[in-house]
Image: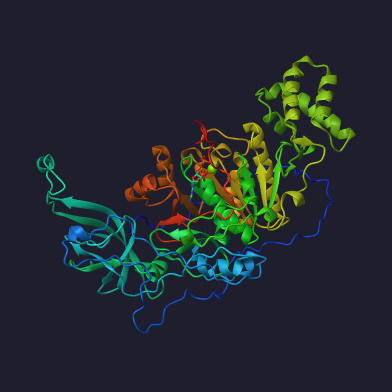
Length: 623
Ligand SMILES: Nc1ncnc2c1ncn2[C@@H]1O[C@H](COP(=O)(O)OP(=O)(O)OP(=O)(O)O)[C@@H](O)[C@H]1O
Ligand SMILES: [Mg+2]
């Protein structure tokens, strides 16, 4: 069916029992007042959202999509447009300023779908000022332009179409079926058939008359029955039947772009159709999401789009930011393509940044207490593999310190080991000196109330931090978030993990592997969502990847990475794999998310500044 067949629920990974890490701020008062929560709904509520606007039934609705002019007297080959159809500019945002929505839970839901049309979602949720307004609502169902006719052998899941107007691969079309009404289909592949032979091509000039026709293979997606279930036709269409552009209303209905209010993260427009696409924020937190693309494919860009939407909806996030890119979201972005209706703004008032280094401007120091680490954990942070030799003396030193004092520094630990006078400790001491130099450990760590604030985005800037220390930071923070969510001490939140292959690798293991795998398999129960971002899908722990209910795939070319994506998406067809390899920057394929077929989305421009631009080696004025 189409590019893709429905995903089945992933098998739960067996629970990994890891003793919870001690919590750095254990010295805080025992029973703090309960924190207010972003109430991400655990169960769908009764629908109260306005339905997607339909045109009155009387009279044919004017089709909003620009019509491709089919010039009747011309032969078919001249009717085929070679330039993409121009879309009209989106109307200027005209929505009045709305009150902020304090929590995602305030928004009633109709369906637990993960993708919702944004125009019904963002309006009520915009907090202030000028708002990003997704463009016009979807077109109503009505007569649309004919783009071709069915010919040749006709199957129930695909057929051939002689193309008579400009269509693109992956574009949605529809055919009226005698039994089921309009059925949604998608252009799979296109081929221009010509009578120009190899021999004739040797003498071809611009005046040579070439007979040519375009043929498309069209995949049948299906229709909704009276119960609203997606069905595939059981009988074939007729040869000679008209293939028409799909109406926005049919696309929304069949693909499951259901109306829902105030819970959507507007990420762009359905490619070629100007239908806003939004991810359901509740599902992001409950079912996890991954963003996969080659380097420079636009992962951080679209992740920034999602974070902007989460900030607007006052959803709490933590971003593990190994390149120090996300702080740029404090600044206003450059205005982009008007058709997306994006209004630029900065998000400084929503961002809290932490860094181990004192040099990061606007960042608070990130500090952990050493006391919360056991001897074995401290050894894991060092490059020594000789646990047998060092574990007893380290344990002894820690016990000695704990007897005397509540908190202690790395220096104090080193001093105890030095006083021990055991010469074999010198390697361990050198390693601890390295840890001391990093400056991550202090007698007082950041309390959880400082790290996580309701409705704010916490950026953990790890730029320039050695990989082993990064893993340690990710492990401690992810364990902390999981434990705190379990006892409801922090609001539901999304943990965003850039360069995820470094923190939960498929081969070998990182210090953070177990903690992340636990969140991937159990986080959903506690409202702790995971967004894994990677340029190397093949190198991420498959258990983590397979737990992602929504996949955002941008341009990917590495065969191993394509294989890894294919393995985690059921029913991935060759057509879809081809699409992923050839997608331009700015286009994303959204898979899963409770939708029936992969969506190609033109990613919306950023409201805030994107900090991930590559470094220019030469400046244009360098002559
Ligand atoms: N949707 C988009 N619209 C406009 N420009 C985009 C879009 N996506 C990406 N770009 C451009 O591509 C560049 C690279 O994007 P981005 O930084 O998101 O890549 P990445 O996949 O995160 O790369 P890396 O793996 O190196 O982190 C951006 O600086 C931006 O200029
Ligand atoms: Mg990036």
